[in-house]
Image (tube, rainbow, N blue to C red; front, side, top):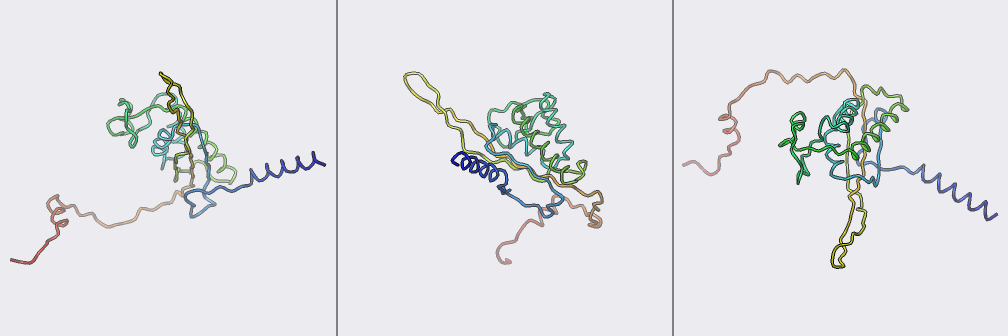
Length: 207
């Protein structure tokens, strides 16, 4: 009986683990046209993941997969626009229009991000979505609790040896082909002087 009870509790724990719903930071307006994936406490650098997500957001999934493959093959760089401290400047950054051509090839983070993207595409196929029309409409990276270790220094000192893992969530949306451009009418060009006059606010009374 004790053995059966332990087995029953184990099965209940496993079922609970796989049926627990997770919360995303945003919810799509049309869930039937979207596909989600996420990874928690991933042992890859948060800053690398943030820049990869920033580069790929808004891309078609095929273009995003090719971008990841090019980074893994050292054919293009990931543009670093926020965390730029100590980042090298490379000629490949010109193709991505990176500020100051700052970029790197974060291989491990790119591979994990690509795996998550592949999982999201598989989820979309399960829902019957057209994978050729999928676009990354949401890509968010958050800091995870750091992994705290220690390293031993000279003179009996101990220094921290922390990792900076990340949480990643991706949402793909099936885009429609027939998107009509809004007709705003003829555009009127104005000079810089006219624009400056419009911005000027007169203060005080008339003299």
